[in-house]
Length: 267
Image (cartoon, rainbow, N blue to C red; front, top):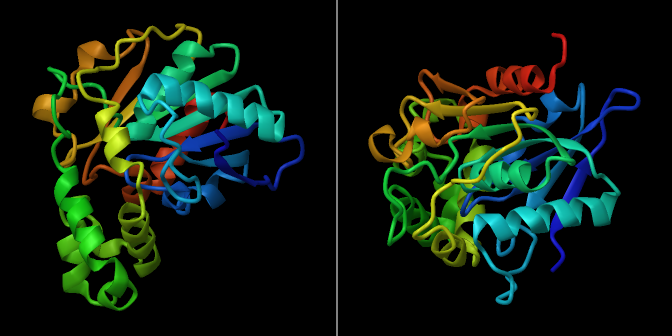
């Protein structure tokens, strides 16, 4: 199938490429806070996964992280001729990004996984915690969201569980997130694609890997979903303070610094 990809050219000459992979029930719009910061060094490619954003759901497409990893690598090469890139993913997209690094060491130069799924102590037999309430809120308020999200109490109701810094979220960010979640027919297939699975692939030690969780992640809580022993032995594991499930929203500049460090840029 064809994915909807978008290229944001860099301000720098001969810049390398970086690929950004969103989470379950999200879309490429989730990367708006990060994209302008990354363009100082990178040509930025954002991805809408199947049944998310502008990519329709294809019921013949396997939705497990391993299959989606292969699809993203193939589409980036087919659409842009890009076969070498740094990589960032969030949540479901973080797991997919790690699978991309494991399967395609010739393409992935570095990977930063933000609150990646797949690091749970025991594989889930039903949807992982934290997501159902967010999706219910999004679907039930989508039609009135442009007005509803003008009110702080509404943003609190929708995003307090996502981030301790929800008060700092712009209306645009909240509306993008709500719209993406409400219009994601790939949500259930994507969730089902993770059931009875964990991340257990091997990544070449030559590929720098940074894994970042927030200290206030209610979607993938540390007690059951952040098992460090499952991470590649050579990876860096970091916990950001005052941070929820989307570190690129809570700490954009710090995340970009980690991306540049993983890629070997001199700051």
